[in-house]
Amino acid sequence: MDDTLYIHNAKAAMTVCKMCKECNGEVCRGQTPGPGGKGQGHTFVRNVAAFKQVKLNMTVIGHNTEPESTYTGFGSSFAAPIFAAPISNVKVNYGSLVDEETYLKGLVEGMHQSNLLAFLGDAPAKATFDLSVSALRTHPKHTVMTIKPWETHALTQRLSEVLNTNPLAVAMDIDAGGLVSLRSTDPKVSILSVEALKAVKTHLGSIPLILKGIMTVSDALKAIDAGADILIVSNHGGRVMDDGMASLEVLEEIVSAVDGRGEVWLDGGVRSGSDVFKALALGAKAVLVGRPYSHASLGSGAEGVQYLSQKLIRELKDVMRMTQCVSLKDITREKVRWVQPIK
Ligand SMILES: Cc1cc2nc3c(=O)[nH]c(=O)nc-3n(C[C@H](O)[C@H](O)[C@H](O)COP(=O)(O)O)c2cc1C
View 1 (cartoon, rainbow, N blue to C red):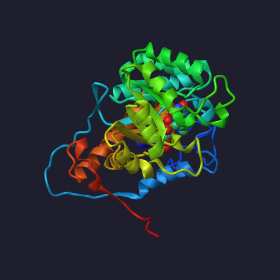
View 2: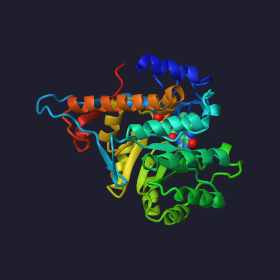
View 3: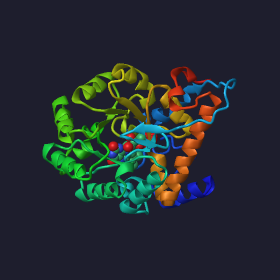
View 4: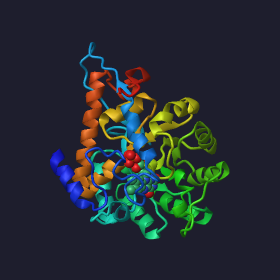
């Protein structure tokens, strides 16, 4: 596979998403449902734009060691700290010609072959949840279910079903709790209190809890108080609130407030290995990549997903080589700097 075929296949597989040269939220402003950001789409656009405001400090005098990108977590090693974000309902959101089951199969198989993690999404329809749980069962060591913050009964029931698969971890996109479109569905979402999140953590026992949708220091501290093991700085790819901050912009203050009491990850606007490097340098331990992985699976299945994974890892290692980083722990704050746009 090469870039031309990869892009051609992805374009041919979707009738709504235009598969723009740069997936930056401009063309699909306001398209939710759809591939875009909510409202005028400013949050999605800002997520991508923020990465352009961080530059790399090239450092080329030193050693000539081959960089190593292994991430260690959940008692395993993964090829890199680059994972696929949960994306569901591809027919509605992308006008996909590929059905949800085939899309999930390509994603999970491709991430398994890449030795990376695929996060899987949830929806009110039990059939959609069931498809994700089935995909989870095919490769339990390379998948994480992301449950929505449903009102109590459905939440307990779905958590139990996921626990039956003996999962690596369980994630919850708490930022879906305020979504108007999911407040009159059956089941419906809810904003969860610290106590409700503590109950989720208790239900999980020793299984790590990942909370996705943290954008402020105060929520980060509440998440830690509730017992979360991993916090994902994320605004759902700009799909839950317009005019919010970019996830990259708030990353450092959240990492600093969490102060090692949990891992902080990030998603939103990660499009290249260089973006992965920037997020790691600003304190994230891993990133999720959303829209690009879904394009890869819709267009070319597992092969496309593997192609994208290898591309991102190759780009990350290129930057590591050019900044004298041998392993992930060498990717530190002084390797990057925030800049003003050049007029
Ligand atoms: C079409 C679409 C569907 C999504 N569905 C879900 C979902 O079911 N659960 C979830 O936690 N996040 C969902 N997200 C958000 C992603 O997991 C992720 O946070 C976001 O896409 C990251 O931004 P990026 O696409 O710019 O990389 C969805 C995003 C898109 C574009």
